[in-house]
Length: 542
Ligand SMILES: Cc1cc2nc3c(=O)[nH]c(=O)nc-3n(C[C@H](O)[C@H](O)[C@H](O)COP(=O)(O)OP(=O)(O)OC[C@H]3O[C@@H](n4cnc5c(N)ncnc54)[C@H](O)[C@@H]3O)c2cc1C
Picture 1: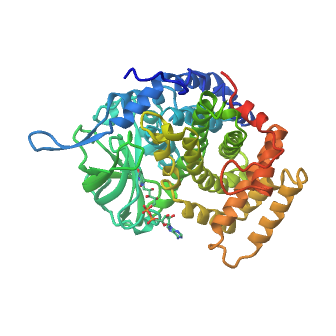
Picture 2: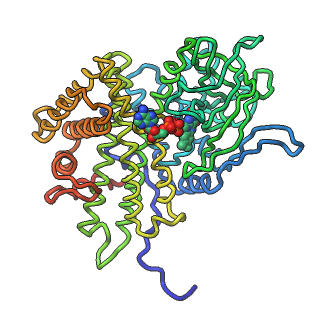
Picture 3: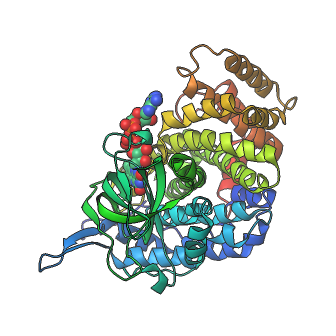
């Protein structure tokens, strides 16, 4: 309506290279020997930073997948249809090797770090499609527990092609994998799984039972857990059998979810579903945990990525919006909030990519492997928690626009809590930290080796390390204190990494704001912290 002139609204984010503009990421990639992936990261970074991708992400979430349980004649078909934008995003992710780059790089240094960079960028394209991409990447170590299974499936997984047809895997140019563990009676405690696996006359087993959560149900195959003759065992369930007929895997319904709307998450029934064992019989948890370790790392790097994306939008908005005579970004209190969010993101990138580097180095260094074991749970817990508050705060920086669906923040806000639930909820991660450090002396030694590296660089960090040591020495009430311990260890790791690798102004801000004089909300950095240095580094042009 011609009632007024539109003034003082923000402008669309101009195209940018999500890799080159991310100084913290570039430095973490270099530190972790992921430089081999630089050109690919930059290529993907410019695509992720294009307005077209923002629109695809919006469309994929506004047009969620639909279940077609039956065809119009009443035959059961169990198909899920997706909007074309979802398929385009999946094709993009697969073409860029988000699911394969580390494995194709073999055991070379920096393989996981480089590929984690691709994942980090792709999370900023669209979080939902990262679920099938992540699971497809993560399945390899579990498949390798059974060389004959790996020989058949690994080459198909590693193809950088997206082929959504529901046909047998041997006819496809590339496949995707899912993972189905959670049942109605328990997800954290998968030992309570009731699905049974009975030997099939033709070889393999037939499954009878259900799964309460099974994301990406149009995947070509799933790893699942079932009670076999020797106890809980991991099985591979193909969606379509080699003869071209559909394996009886029935999709009961799709979850009506808070967020992650582009991605289908389903409830499924196994009704004499054919499957083949993977790994040792009765060692199902030990087999599938290899896959889960990978997906947990992706939750950690993905949480850092989601922070980065939220902070970028917040800084952009605050740069273009004015109130009370100055742009928001010029207002001292808003500068404190934005710098604090940027600081949290820096610390998240540093921690998550340090763990990714431990995955790489752990192939030849047992100490690094032990650090990866405990560090993954620490980073997964802490970063998946921190991103929730950070996203809410970044949304608030947009004022009312942040709450409106025309803008991206509402979608990012709905995604934010998911990382703290799937792949093991928060408490489960903290209990896993305790388990790792008490059952494995190597993990405890590796954790302390990392924690002690910056000893002597700052008295506030030294004091925190001493108090963590005292807390761990007290074996009483450990479970009660598991969150406190994990949180303090995570903070100490982040502070140490920033002291050793970040510009001094950032490290000082983190120590002052998180270890010494911090408040409970973002935007509590004490007076004297160099906000300009943090904001300039975060808003680097590219
Ligand atoms: C969108 C979405 C997609 C998903 N996709 C998949 C999928 O593809 N495949 C799959 O297998 N699963 C999937 N899940 C399920 C997810 O992994 C589980 O929901 C999660 O592991 C928690 O299990 P639960 O829901 O049974 O909760 P519970 O195990 O009942 O846990 C409830 C709460 O209790 C806490 N808790 C549990 N044990 C303890 C303890 N000993 N001490 C203290 N606290 C404890 C947990 O931390 C949690 O906060 C998905 C979930 C969501 C939301």
